[in-house]
Length: 113
Length: 112
Image 1: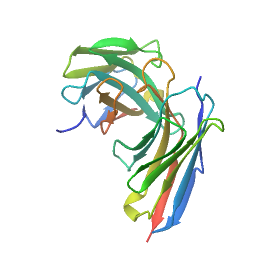
Image 2: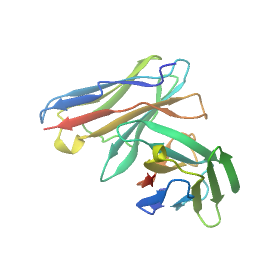
Image 3: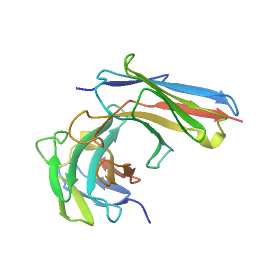
């Protein structure tokens, strides 16, 4: 069974400084890795989805995947206070459809002006 | 497009009562998922439907929980004899097959 762990639990950065979040998983055979964010009291918003080793950029959000290291990271360029939210790493199941997801516990990001 | 609509947004029940949560997926989406979110366990998969048929309910507690999708415009999650440990945010999501999953805002269930 897939296990997903995120670090750090919380992160505070200044507006404009790069924010880096980490996620490790136990089963590298999954075909899809995603980052979501959740503002307080809101639903989940998908930021970036990556299928292959390497880098995937979506606006200010860049994901890096290294299956051999069982690691995927998210880098947020020039974060704004409005980016303050919980960031969730999600890994799809290797079989049964790639929208059946296992989530990490989340990283609480605070961006201070 | 109103997105995935979940009602009610908040539900309070007494221990032992029944709770029914409602989800309206995005029109045209063929897959509907239910997840549960708690502080202790985080986000957990419960069940999903494809073209209204139940495909995988491996995350559903075997007793008291049931989900249905009687037509393509709504799905329900029913919890019988609710217990305090059922208190959580229940999230519904929909997608076209193998495509981006869109989440609703969730229903917060509080069992007193």
